[in-house]
Amino acid sequence: MIELTTVQHKQPLEYLAPAGRIGIISLATDFNIEADLKRIYPDDVQFFTSRVKNINPLTIENLRTMAPGISATVDTILPGVELDAIIYACTSGTIAIGVEQVAELIHKVRPGVPVTNPVTAALSAFQCFAAKRISILTPYTEAVNQEIAEFFTSQGYDVLSIAGFGFEDDTAMTYITPQDIADAAVACCDPQAELLFISCTALRASFVLDEIEQRIGIPVVSSNQALVWHSLRLLNYPAAVLGFGALLREQLAVDAARTSE
Image (cartoon, rainbow, N blue to C red):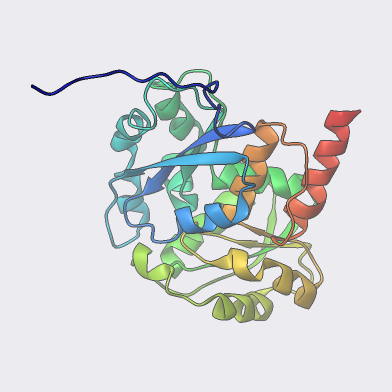
């Protein structure tokens, strides 16, 4: 006969991720998002990812097909455990589906939880830098870039230039090297731009944000960097994060100083 016993823990249960728990809705084809966020988020913040089905090639029409799966995807992120924020991690998908609709689909399952996405995060970052004239670099085709440019123009921004690598395969976008991203960013940024936005969670831009800012002399905002920054703001995170551009280094420090006052 097998003897069955129950053991008791001697220490109090440890509350993991004391600074915050963040749910991530990632594209099924995104090769980069977890690795990038792990590099950027502080150790006391933890994120939990679930993937929503999407279709290659990346077109505006295909991006919209994700919408019906968003609520079900949210429902699989730590059911029954409180989340401090939820991220829908697709820039072009947010524009294709709509900021408000994405938030609605998330709140159907997780009402009341703060929600962000790369577009909302980027717009908030633009405001922090008081930037109105922007250049944009993406991995997308010209057809998708047209939609991206029109969206930011509709939000009151002067899009001076937009350049893309012409990729339709979301997974392959991650294969673009950080150095190619940096060089393309410098080449495509308009001299009159007040800020450069690098769109797409699949791009490994976080490796070269500081380098690009040094080379062009203006703030650089990328999708994943903006997501981390905006979600940390939602958590009232009390410190700057170094190594990933002025947004996390300077603006997060400003927020922390205001919180401590």
